[in-house]
Length: 513
Picture 1 (cartoon, rainbow, N blue to C red):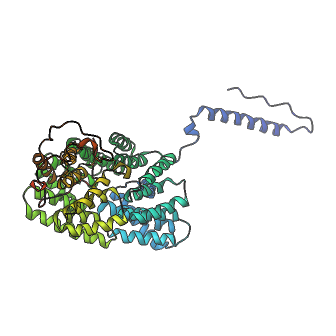
Picture 2: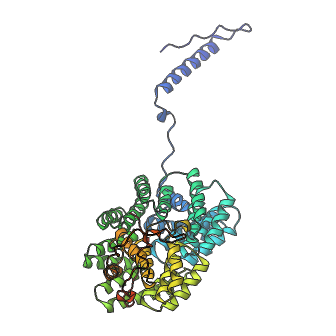
Picture 3: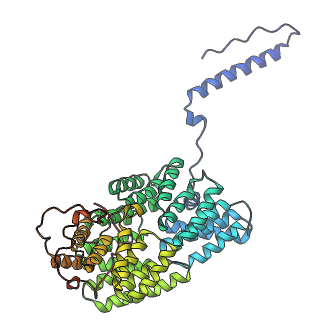
C-alpha cells in the first residue's frame, strides 16, 4: 500500500526529531487503517441491530393488532401483569396488557377476558400520555370483539384523530364501519390505510372488504399474498383459515379442507380452521369426521355459532336429541358472552327464527337493526319476519341484504335462499326460482338443513312457463323474471321448511362465484 508523503513542514519553529517521527507514524497508521476499512464489507464495518426476541415480536404484533400465538399471548400477559403490579403508573404496560386480553378473549371465545381488558385499557387512559394511543385503539378492538360497532366507531375515530398517520387504528375502524353498514366509509378508510401501510396485515384486511364487495378473485389473491408474507406461524395460520372460508363459500369444500389443514399444521391453536374443517367435511358427506371436528373445537373454543352449526348437523342426521343438547349449550354460552359485554342478538335471533320463537327473533333483530344496520342483520331480520308470517316487510330486508348499493355486493348462498323462500311465500314464483337456483349455484353445500329444502322448493316450483319475452315494465324490480313472476305455481307451503329450518353454518357468511 502506498502511504501519502508528509507535506512540507510549514515555516516557523522547527519541531524536534521525536515529534516529527510521531507525526509520521500517526499519518501512516491512519492510512493503513483507512485502507483496511475500505476493504471490509459494509456489514462488517457497521453491524446490523440484533433481531428482536420473541417477547419483543409479541409486543409489536399485539400493539399492531396482528394475530399472535396463544403461548406467546399467555407469556406476554404474565409478564405485563407482573410489571403493572410493581409499576402501577406504567400506562404503556396497562395498554398493552389490555390489548393482549382482547386478543386472548377473541382467540379463545372466553368473554371473561373482556371486562379485564376494559379495566386495563381505561387504567392506561388515566395514567397520562404514555400508552394512550394504544389504549384507545385497544378500546376500539374490544368494542369490535364484543360486537358493539357504535362504540368501536367512536374509539376508532378518536384514535385516527389523535394520530392520523398511525396505521394501526384503521383496521379497527374498518370493522366498525362494516358492522354499521357504512360502506362508503369502508371504501374511504381502506384507501387511507393502503396509502399509509402495505404488508400482510393490510392485505388480509383488504381481502375482507373485497369479499364483501363480491370481488372473490381479488380477495383470494390478497389472502394468498398475506399468508406468503406473514411473519409468524399464528399470523400465517389466520390468513390460511380465511382462505379456507372463501373456498368453502364458493362451493369448493376440497380446496377449503386443504387450506384449513395447512392452517392447523402451521398453528394447532387456529380454532377457526378446526370449525372450518367441520363445515367442509359436512359438505363432503364425511359426517363422523365432521362431528369429531366440531366436538373438538367446542371443547377448545366454545362459541355459540359453532354450537349452532353442530346442532344443525345433528338435526340433518336425524339426531334430534343430540341437536337439542347443542342448542342448550348455545343458550348457555350466549348468556356467558352477554355477561362479558358481548352482543349476542344476531346469533340468538337466527337461532330463534329457525329453532325457537320467531316472534322473539323479530324483537331481538329489530333492536339489533337499530344499533347495527349491517348486511348480516338485514338478512337475519328479513328471515325472522318471514318465519313470523310478515312476508311483505321481510322482502324489504331480504332485498336490502343483496343490494349492492347498501353493501350487499357479496353473493351469498344463504341470503339468496332466504330471499327465494320469502318470494315463494308471496307467490312471486319467477324471482323465487331464480334466487333459489342462485343459492345452489353459489354454494351447493351452504347448509345441511337448507340445501335439501332449497332443492325440494325448486322441484315444487317446476320449470318456468314457456311464454314470449317480457314486456318492459317501468320500475320493475326483477325485469329478467317479470314474465314468470305472475305465472301459475304451487302454493308455497308445499316445501316451506317451517319445522326444520336452519342457518348457514359459516361464520363468514357468503361467497361469490
